[in-house]
Length: 307
Image (tube, rainbow, N blue to C red):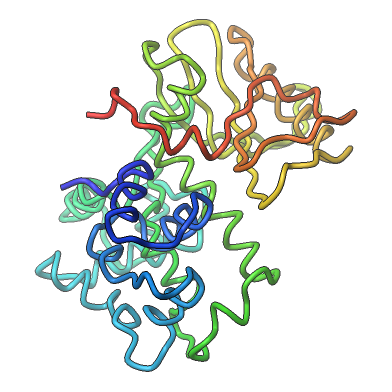
């Protein structure tokens, strides 16, 4: 059974009579993903922050030790799987097979391929190939529950009201920025639908290039490219904000650099700069760089193209 989408989580939250709006549903999804069991534990008498404290950080919290039981229940020999996800947890863009082997005690050959395939089939990791490098697959950890564990619980003993006390602090907001990117990666069919390109064959990639003066490259990292079978690429920039996103001069400069680097590297494709942000974009002198805008509401839409 595949995890629920945001649309399905919203329906389930309504059935559970939870007092959550869409940003709050999205935030809980960013913490636990779309696993129905984790949603069934939520209590309608609590708000979101109280629920997360009760489930993860309070004494005897039901999900505080869940991580160690999760892998033991899924895999007969969980240790090599844990080595892989721990290595991937510190690399936002993912690692190649050889990099995973170098970071763990796994060997080239043997069960390594099976371990990676099992993690992919269980939705812990996604596999993608950088543009033009079909034989260099990268494995990226995208399971929200696992990443939440490594970010806030692994090797730590936070207080029982940790989440409430740290809400809207730099720690919390940094996590939300990373977690929102994963939320978007897990909802690329909805992004395509909102862009009106559901009928176009695509592949999704992360992409980076190093500065190279001879080639005119300034150096960029892009977390989501939607590479289309027509003559275009959607370069997706994902920014979490509780209010309208206000683009700064630095944003405009960064976005222009990424577009320029991508055009230099893939000259046959037109680049459509696409901003994904929860509430929307505040119009100002720097916002004109954005050619397509996707909001959180679009990620909540039912998507017929999902299998």
